[in-house]
Image 1: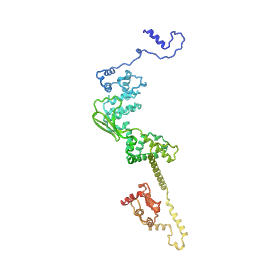
Image 2 (image 1 turned 180 degrees about the vertical axis):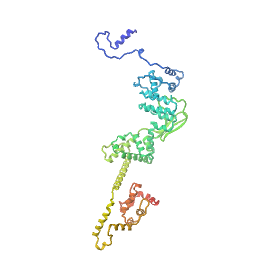
Image 3 (image 1 turned 45 degrees about the vertical axis):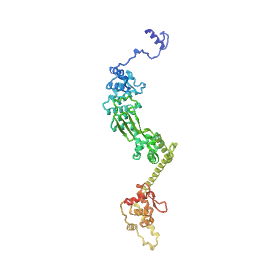
Image 4 (image 1 turned 180 degrees about the horizontal axis):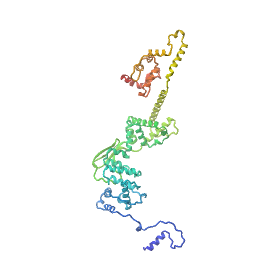
Length: 505
């Protein structure tokens, strides 16, 4: 086909009229270029030599990981400054390799890598990020394991949309290359392990850490709950107690621990390091056992096969979410909060346990409130003299004349008389001598009313004083006055006896 015929054919495709004077209205049209007219990037000699590696006889029977490693090592120090225009082009390459990229893509990648190494973080398509991550895990262009970890961490930091397949490579890198333990805390893969450990050892975990674990591993968004926003401390106190109570319940009445109920059993399974990556292992890894934390460990045997021991689930627990939601629902009922929630699908035993925890917290708050009110009572000592003087006047009017001489004439004499007649109590310990005697009378079954009469103090006054002084130890009243006569509550008899024998009262 000659040039004239070809030009005529292109004119027909574009709808150009044969007669220029036909009166047709012209508009912008895309320019169709011949393949020979399209500008192609120059192929550097280094890239041409790299491509030739794939054509060698050895490459035909080696793996794709071997080829990637050979080509990557060959191009480890290569730099470029090509003006690449395809950064924002949509191009999918699940697991990129040099052999699958055209010249423009290769020059664009090496130019981007050059800028990254120099601290310039230009926009990059996903396959650039994945390709560079594969170079790092193979330690291509990396002088030490520590440097490789920092580069991989920086890549994930500067490009948050880095493909998900590279997410676990940072933790794999730290384990495979035997980095010190301080690197583990920087791996997102191990972050949930810290929260699961809090559940496994909830009795030894402080409230803040346990609550953080609940919030992170619960699919029920606690921070979005209206009740939890209005009563954050109350909900926090309740949910951590619920978790500890459930842990104790499972330990006593179930075959599985609470942690196993939420996250499955602790099992050992096969593990592939740098999954999906073109990772070339030049020699088999030595036999090693690595404990990352209490709930995760790795093992490599002499055959280079890796295994990991951990809980079956390491992400959010649906069961934990239901427990968190049910606690929210029952607290709303207890507080009369508007906006009731639907019941969660949790066992009745769990519901009863949550209710018991909420009732206990409510009772504690009521006692604390009552104690605060008692502490607010203020006695104005400056008015005592006037009160005593008024009492003298009332006394003089009530007694008969012949009995008047038996009473002191003034408030001062009353005070002096009381000071003379009131026995001096021994100091030391939590209780006064009179209160200690009252406790001994209760323990021995003696007539406590007769004892109180001998001290000149009412039994109720002695009992209230003892209850108040021992409340900080037992968080409860130890002497009960609801019956016919006062008595020490059965739950505390042994403790009171022991404290009395040890001289701790």
